[in-house]
Length: 183
Image (cartoon, rainbow, N blue to C red; front, side):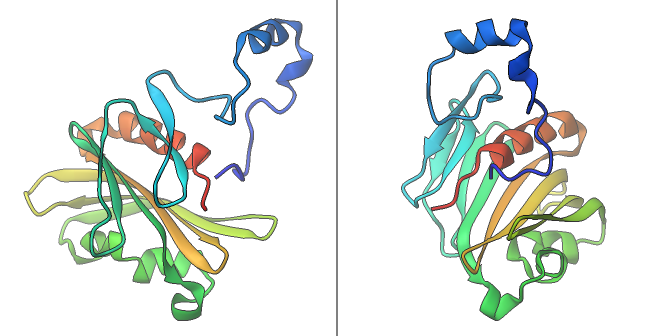
């Protein structure tokens, strides 16, 4: 994304200790805060995103979803399937009421949400939230979701994992959303 509402190290270059470590880092387009074990992948669908190394990409399905899978975790990306002309320009309403990737949350008898918020940075409008539900196998899942508007289309970044692995889901989500660049 690159348009997060906060950047943790905007002024860190002024500290002498950081300058030495920055000189050793190669000059790339990858985010400076990319965690160990992650790599930025330039997807054939035209976006780039940080994915845990070793995860397998699944081809785009009939719902326009691209999935990266690793162990019990999944990174799901929808790069612009839905348009604002059809679904409106309020990413909060889209996320809560219309986003197909959150249908299991809306349909589950055991579900919850928290941290729902809208983020506006310049002309970019986004909404994010944390969701829990029981999946079709009966597993309790913890889901972090971001819906962002880019050039009149909704882009969705979602990380799904076991409810008892919330910290790892959060880490995977932070890496994906912090590095996502739409086409």
